[in-house]
Structure formats: structure tokens, C-alpha cells
Length: 118
Ligand code: AMP
Image (cartoon, rainbow, N blue to C red):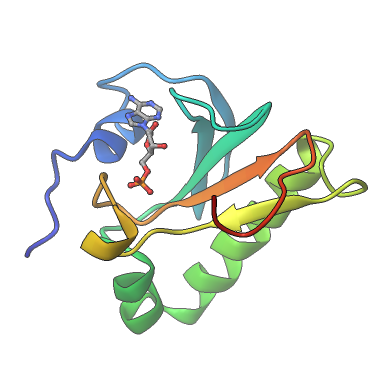
């Protein structure tokens, strides 16, 4: 499957669909999840055309990887989650129920999150 330039997150980054933007730098863009699964639920997406974690890890240049993951950490700090803790999740493919095919990391926090899977 090729990268779809019209996926929802690509449209959000182009400003074609509104979002509650929380952070942007040259590597990453972060916004609130529209259906939060925790008191804080932020999506962080890299700038660039990567379908999932698998694609990003295999193909992104090292400066983008470094900058992207630094942005994930900075957003978690900005949201006040670093002291009490947070969870990051990235779904790749069908078994993980990935629904938007632009690589993204979910940052979840703001309460005790319990076990790894429901
Ligand atoms: P995933 O299942 O890992 O691909 O996650 C996709 C996430 O995108 C879900 O948590 C959705 O709630 C979220 N989502 C879908 N559309 C939007 C949107 N327009 N704005 C913000 N979040 C969205």
C-alpha cells in the first residue's frame, strides 16, 4: 500500500482539517486526539510521508528520527506528564487496528493507566 497524501493527518498538517494543535517544529506536529482515551491524549506525527512506525523506522533519515522522538518527549513534558508518567503507543497494521495510515504516536496520561492491554 502506497502512502495516501490525503489521509486525515496529512490534511490536518496542511490546515485542510481543523485540529487542536499543541506543538509544531521542523520535524513534528502534535494535536489532541478527537476521541480521547485518557484525560490527556495527544497524537504526534512526523513531517514526511511515512505510513506507520514500521515504515518510519525503516526509511526515515536519522535527523528526522531524532527530531521526531525529541518532539514526542517535549510534548509529554509540555502536557505536564513527565512526573506522574505516561504511555506512548503506536499501532502498525491490521492486527494493531491502525486506522490512520500516517505514522503517529499516541501519548496517553493524566490518570493511572492500568495494565498494558484491556
Ligand atoms: P490509530 O488507530 O492508531 O491509527 O489512531 C488514529 C487516531 O486518530 C484515533 O485515536 C482517532 O481518534 C484519531 N483521529 C481520527 N481523526 C481525527 C481527527 N480529525 N482529529 C484528531 N484525531 C483524530
